[in-house]
Image (cartoon, rainbow, N blue to C red; front, side, top):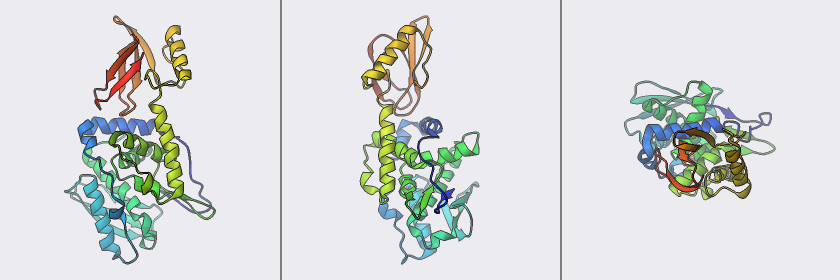
Length: 296
C-alpha cells in the first residue's frame, strides 16, 4: 500500500480513476450479489480503530487488525502484524491462509492514529484474494482494493488519513481523496448511513463532499427522470438524430426487431440496463434489484 507524505509530495486530486472505480463496484455486485453487499451495512466503528500511545504496540495492532477482519466478514483469517523500515505504508503476504503476514511501516510505532487505515487496505487485499476477484493490471487491482474497502465499510479510514497543509501532504491508498468520497457516497446511498460526523480530518470531509457531489450526478443522468432539463434536451436531440452515442454521455442507442432501445448504467451498481424507447417506464436492474424511473 502506498503512502504519500511530506512537503515535497503533492496529493493528486480529482477523478482520474473513475472508470475503474465504477467497474470495481460492478464487479463487487457480481461477485457478492446484492444481498451479499448489503450484509456489509454497518461501517467499521471509530472506537474499533482507536489505538493510543498507552496501548501495547503489537497487541494493539493485532486487536485493530482482528476488528477489521470481522468487519470484512473473514472470521477464519488471522493477521500477524509486524513492523519494519520500508517505503510503503504496509504490505501483506497473500497465501492460502488462515494466517496472513502484514508488515507495517515503522513510522506507525509513533504515528498510531492512521494504523487502522493501513491495515484496512491490506486486509481488503486478503478478502479479494479469498474471493478470487482481480483485474488484469496491478494498478487496477490497487484501485479495486481501495474501492472495495470503502464500499464495504472500512475504507472511510483511508480517507480520514488524508491531510494536506503547509507542512504535510499525506494520503494512503491509490484513490484520490475525492474518489474515496465518491465511493463512500455511493455506499451511503445504498445503506442510508451518513459518515459526515466520523471524519477527524477537515480535508477528508471536504473531499467527501466533493465526491458526494460527483456521485449525485450519477442519479441525474438520462434517461432517468431525475435528469436536469439541459441533459434531457441533449438526450432528446441524440434520440431524434439517430446517433448511437454522444461524447461524454453514458447512454447508448441501438435498434433491433423490436425498435429503438437505449442502454445506460444503473446508478447503484453500474450494470448496464437496456430498455425500449417508449416514453416513461420503470426499469428494474437485474443485478442490484434497484427499480429506476426512466423517461426514454
